Image (cartoon, rainbow over all chains, first blue to last red; front, side, top):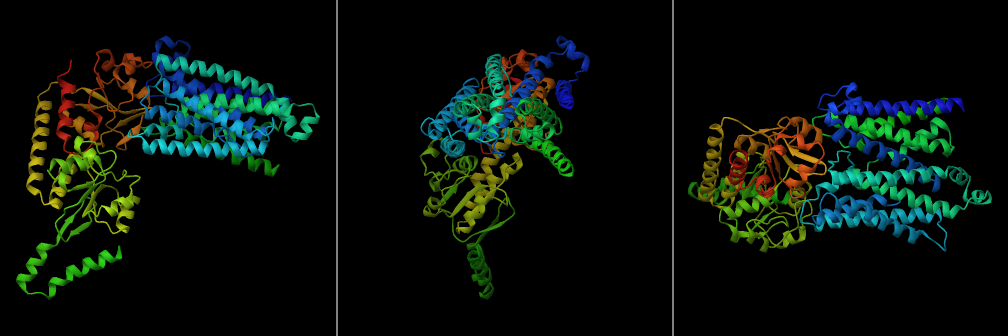
Length: 321
Length: 298
């Protein structure tokens, strides 16, 4: 138990370190001292802090929801996008772009697209009040494919060049905030934090589910209501993230696995560790993505370039042990 | 592919067996023009039916006065406005190949690299392709001359080149006479921020108009950049070459209020993005509107 607290201490320290680094690195000279006196360097509050917070939020939501989905679906290959939410969000954003709607309405439409997908998947997957994991998975993949095709159709039919869509698909933390979009971000952050709390609240149920649905039921877990709650709550949080930062890949898939390797399968630890690790990995990746080259690299690429070697290292270590 | 090569080979060999005068006549009949990929394209008869796979090429063909020969254009070809009435053959990425074959064009003009899938497909279907590669103003002028040559309108092409060169010359002269050269940030896209560097077509236009490009050193023509780089770079003029945001939206961006261009109200959203970014006959106009924004707007 003691070693686990130590791991958490480490993870927390890493996140703080990454955050400080993220505030200091950039084209404008900012020293560590300035972080305590931000009025000296306006760039900290207006540009770097929103980007850092978006990175932390996106990493935390993707990793924790990825972990929850892997638990609920009992599928190690699950990721936050497996139930089609990101395709729906990208599709909503594409429609908004094609209609020429402004910078505030695009994320709103993305969330709307994700919610429509959520509703469709939910209705499709439900069989007589139950929500079997395999039909949920199938319905999610089918809906994801359908909305991806719809997205292509919008892109093909729209006379405007929808370059932004490509970036939504790649993911990017370089959101240019205005006071209005910042308000939207704050609202989405609050919603996402509430969702994450609900997810963590279910760690016991997730542990029970890991033993199989029948076993969980016999242990007194209301399996279907747990699945419904987690599915809806995670999708809402993911929709908010995709609407703002695009579908950043990899974090939500591999971070929960890393967390399990570090701390074992108990969701009480896996979920918060995923949250911390996801946020750290994304913040670190973003620092690299925006400072390696004169232009920005897609953050998802850097995330997997950083995450895969770490994952392989842990895998090797475990094999040897 | 092979068939064409064999046929072209035969056409080339034929004159060898002929007497001197006849040989001359044959050589005149076959026109060989090198396109901007360096490929030698042979024209056995005069070109009467043209398909254009790029808005800038459509503009050029119209500017040369050959609109009657245009039988197909892309869905993006919207200038001059009459071009919209022409048959649509999809766009460069998703061309309607069957329609193109049915239109029986004598030549398909397109902008492509040697590895382009579209180019290979068109060649595979036995369509005659002529590739243009207008990445700079020089190459754009060259593209006018080449299209003119293919269409047998060399004189019109020379006139068009002269006209554009004169305009560019005037803009350059005006820039040289200026005491200051404003620092420019040209926004090509807003989510995320995309700009054109020194290697891009708009980058060259900024230089011609007398501006200094904030992102002159970008390694590729276009790239994603961070908001902080723009804020830290303190551009004196911001040009929005996309319809997604207006000058007012830029003022509202967090942290952008400190940028000199925003403070002095020199954020321009009324320059036509198509004029600015298409390497075609409106290139001179593009340099003029940029010059106007740099030197004649308050």
